Picture 1 (cartoon, rainbow, N blue to C red):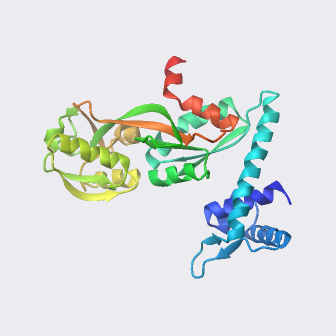
Picture 2: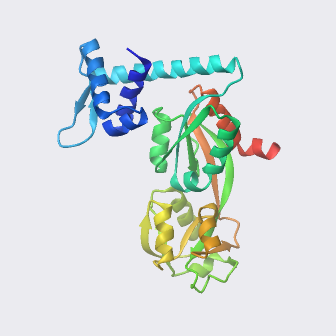
Picture 3: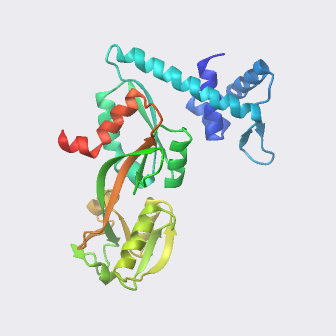
Length: 299
């Protein structure tokens, strides 16, 4: 039995897809199926069950034990590799990072490029998801690191603050607010808005700030993806409040007008999260150091 087979099994369980597990491990789907059968033959136990009528797979009782122990073996093997590489000062391995779209698409790429330049033998594997899913993946060990907006303190989770973003108002270039450089929140009373979905941290923060100023607006639409929100504003669905880094290109290209708020409340903190009890790989530690706002300010 090879380490690679354990990795294929764990990837299949976590990704719930034979095709994605095959793609991640550079093998065919039939090869994935064969490796699963080999494991089941070796231990004389059924490890996975297909859910009839659906694409997902489900762990059997034996499969749950095998998955848990396989994760420990893979972590130990990764630690062994890192320990040996550290003897010659080499940072290597893959760091799995889950992040929300607005941060992952617009703020992390420069940091990833910087990391890859410094440590060419290491790789950052970015996955984009909703905040709740990012937190779940960090807690269950599917990823080493999570990067989220408005990180909330939670037992067993370490938060490393990154920078804070300014939240700004965006509107179509022909809107009456488009020529403004600043605006007061009270001027938004009764306006139509395109929002993030209600359970997202940025939406919760936006609602809280609007309420604190006694401002009521109309919801014309809500989406879970910042790219969709921007496109909706472009076609005049309404105004929106978004992190400034996410609209740099649209402002430069004249697709959207960006207006700052006069109030100081419109700040979105961003942070790296990971399990406090987890021994981060050397590569993950280096990436966290790169993202750490305090270390960046002191460097």
